[in-house]
Length: 208
Image 1: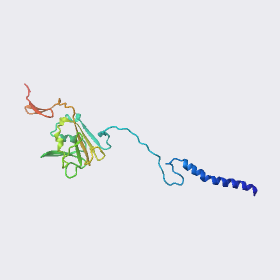
Image 2: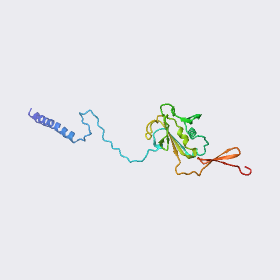
Image 3: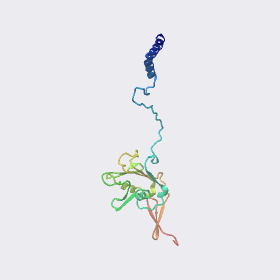
Image 4: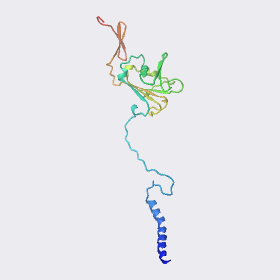
């Protein structure tokens, strides 16, 4: 029996030291680390860093975006500026040709009618719907003065606030006052020349 006393005493001494060793290990562990008796799972810290890149551009919005550029606008012969939106996919044009509003675009089942202003219209980023939600101010911009038309569908665009349920239409005008371009259309014996602001009739020359 004597030889067995020493191993039992050593085992008892080691067992008495284990709780203190575990406490020291828990104290030295990181604050976010989970222990064996803790059922919670603590994830490590996540550091997010970045730099300001200015105003969010239309091309960067995570949704369906269509941009009609000046190269597609300048050669289109339209009577009203809202007709240019018919060049973009998924947009239906409603033509009335009467009253203060001759027509309007519709997409994603929303237009400017009723109490819900489902499509927000902007001119150079400035909200341009009337109180009823209609879009008649698009016709204030001559087609030759338009640099691009940006159509954003859905509600993922955080730039323009409320009322863009179906999406938004931003008419971007040309800057710098360059009116050196003209559009020529022929009506009978003379020709009508438009620089986007005025109309002038040019009589045909000899043989013309």
